Amino acid sequence: MPEVSEGQQRIEGSGAELLAQTLKSSGIDRVFALCGDHINHLYRALDLNGVEIVSVHQESAAVHMADGWARATGQPGVAVVTGAPGHTNTITGLACAQHAGSPVLLISGATPLEQRERGGMQVLPQSDLTRPITKFSHEIAASDHYGEFCIRSLQIAQDGTPGPVNLNAPLDTLLGMRQAGVDGRTPSYRSELACRPDYKGGGKQMDDAVALLAQAQRPILILGSGAFFEYSEDEIARVTSLLNIPVFTVELARGLLPDDGQLCFGYGDPFFSTSFREARGADLVILIGAQVDCHQVMGRLHFFAENTRFIQAHRDAHKIGMNRSNAASFCGPVKPFLNYLAESSDNGASVRKADWMARFRDAYQQERNSWQTVLSVAEQSEPQAAMHPLKVCISLERHLTDRTTITVDAGDFIHWARSFFPARGRGRWMDGGTFGALGAGLPLGMGAQLAAPEDPVWIFLGDGGFSFYSWELVTAVQMGLPIKVIVGNDAAWGIEKRLQLRDYGKAVGCELPDIRYDAFAEMVGARGFHVSDPDKLDEVIDDFIACTGPAVLDVRIRQLAGRPFQFER
Image (cartoon, rainbow, N blue to C red; front, top):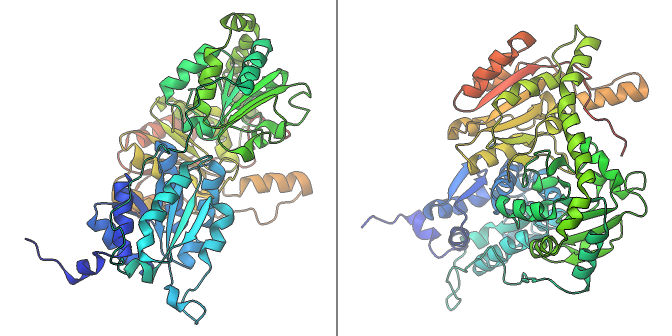
């Protein structure tokens, strides 16, 4: 029998062991973490319980990676960081997950309770700091509480509108032994909560919704993050084919129903899709797991008419009736609601709406056909300028598959990719959403790659965004993650330079140094590729995509290329 070390004896029966065991029994086999004194004992307990630790280089990156994992799998992602400065570094990651509606559990170490108000090192009200940007934030007061609060946190993260939660773990409670006489069994956990009702349909709201759909001549359906967590791709395909009305997707639902130009027409946002601008003529908007927000121009009358009616199903009562009142609402699971609506719909009405569907098919095809014209006009207007971002997208499209995950960051360069590439699969499209955290695209994409290690993952970043988490490439190298990072390098903070020149005639503080980011990639052990000559673009991209392991493509692009589809919100 192997000898038990003194260190292992200290873990047995401790709060750290209970937390690690509860995570493992809850199906958590991997956490994203950065080590620190407060969590060394938890690290040991995780290791003893067979939970993999993915080591990062900055705490917010750990949260972003957990977020990327959650978006790719639909299951909670877990991040573990040390206390005080380690905890404060996670704020951006938590806010990003909150805006995305992504179920992330952050476990933060903390100073021992007995040092509070006594001049202890790194004392900080950690739960108070994260409470405004999480669904639940709690400091563990006793070693026996770790199992219960781990379970509760995972449940809260997934219930209603999913989102991040935070458990703060003081060192003395991690080290402390569970009390005699207290139930020491590891709590059980189920991802499908018993409190979620199984709605079978019927009732006034459902009858109203069915009647509204039957009366509508120009309906559209918008799928949001709530649909992502309840539907598989096959299930949503069946339901939407029954409805046979134009479909758009936003947030985590991008790709849940692939953008095919026949039934699903892409982004439900006029800022990124000219096809969605046709929705201005809609007389009925059905929101499933979505709400009227900035994606739909806040429901303003210059987009949706005053007499446009809305049907909304959402788990979160706070999201119901946001910005526009509903003609019919349902607060609860969205899947049975939409299924009932589709199965009760009049197929004959779909035939009457054929011209409405054709309008979107034409608009979608016109948008796809326009890209080459947009590029030609841009190149002819500035023949001496550096490469246009759209040219990069068109070249990459030759390698796009249905299994490619696309992660786009923030900034002008990435908006060309955001608008150009169709979303083709559930959990295979990630963007900054309504938070737009610059740089988050890299760790988000790494989390997605770990969720699907054999599938291609493309990460689009500007040169400014790349600098935020560039050292996470080391983690990608260490783990052999074959991520492909496309850096649009214009040596500028592109959006701000464009806006300052537009508004003031002069740009201040918007220049970046001329750096070869492919050289940085090579320095840390990844592959690096560079291209500035348009005639060599296809060849370089072919080699870039074909290479094994993590790689960075540094593309010299023109400044002030702006973004496609300018639209006033």
